[in-house]
Length: 440
Image (cartoon, rainbow, N blue to C red; front, top):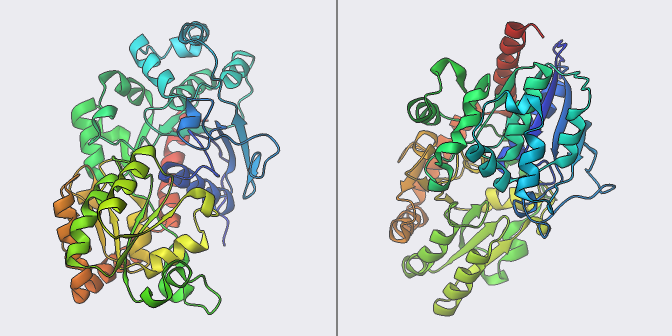
């Protein structure tokens, strides 16, 4: 791979980092590694010690401890993980943060600060360190993900170091809990916002009054070669159905979901749709990959009591990262990829399904209608409508030619336009514009 000369040092400040697994973390990791290896950037990553979302706020969440694999380095990138401080009062947090001049220069309201503190992560050690004389060796700070406290920490650091700041908020504007007015204040302070879709840009412009020229639209990406079926059809590759399906049922159809198993992602709605799906098409397995939730487990137990259903339920404990052999095999062998979510600013998993030549179903809400072209490379359903979900899933399970055409159209789209290299190139160009403009 040809290296492009760059004299830039970038500081990434995501909410979490690998081995934490979600779209926002994967996005930062993917572009950071490409900018380091191909564009010769100096790259440092600041993040919390949390692995799951509970760990951002609560001591009983999952965290990565000092000395564990991936703690201080991931794929040649230096990772600085700050421990989340849990047992400290809100008043003490407010008092300490307000003693930092670069925070007060931001002009954020107390309501805003309190909201972000409650979302976490509160990184007291980071705050203590930046109060001391700070040596900045970076040209730009890039953070994600709205509305978590690391976004405010990035702005504090940007003010202190006089460096441009970039935020990819992954704004879930169809989810009411993200629409509190006080949450929007920090987004107005960044030098550049990277939106995943033009729909997201329009919402940021119309609802938040962020100037259009401040927002750059850069889509998400996929490593096509990791998922393309031809690449993985090797004699020693992992065979998902052979591993998890009953021997006499390996010709059954498969419906796959990959993501947080919660209401916002549509996992609960899928479970509610299962009784109607199996009435129309009995020979089918449902595969769920991702962190589980109490609501999901309860609903699954309820469904299993009323209908004979084949469910394979995998969690991060069963997997080994983004390119886990079981996950890739699941995408390669599924018949339908189903993620009827309202909490996706893009949906990287749709790209992964298309790279595997599979048809997708998403919710007709938020940014998804820009990602999925209805009846061209996938189907759209009404969010949280189990009847609609069952109808569309049944359609794809029964209509083999339609499913094949949708999957191939998605495959062609991904192959031509949606590589991580393309995302990194556009991000590199955005960085250089900001760095040159500010002369750092």
